[in-house]
Length: 117
Length: 116
Image (cartoon, rainbow over all chains, first blue to last red; front, side):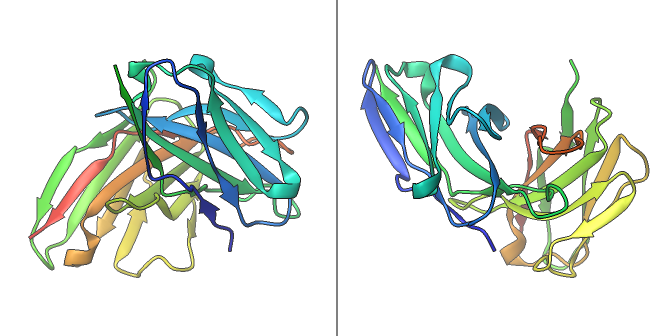
């Protein structure tokens, strides 16, 4: 079964600092990749996704992620964080099994990001 | 706004007392999911419905059941809750796509279940 690892469980940054959150997955085949964000008291929302094509994908609120197939990684980045980026960030994978996409996402444990003003 | 709604947001039950969590959607999506998220852990898929077709994950305990009476509603039934079932339960929906793409899942706010 596939698994997703997020290396940083808690990250504290100051405003305007650059952000990179690591995500690695274990599935060897073709995958769909996602980053979801959960702001305090709110539901999970999609930040960005990768299916194919350009490995550098851009999402909402200035976030981007790079898919590196050889490293099984899909790291999330933002050049300058804001206090409002304080949230829980989840990396998720959906493997493309032969014959079509499987349903459901496999999530990492999440990274709790705190931005200090 | 179209959305995924979960009721109640907080549910307290007693050990062994059956409990039902509900999810409704106004998105008219054909797939509905239930995830379990324990404290400091990743959301874990329990099962999903594609239309009326039920798909159980291999490691989902028999204690967990689900019903989808129509497109809009899906229920999670826990027949005999144990202390280890205390968690956040997330409902999500998705419109299944044809071919390579995978449409995003839309999540509800979750129901936090406490077992006394």
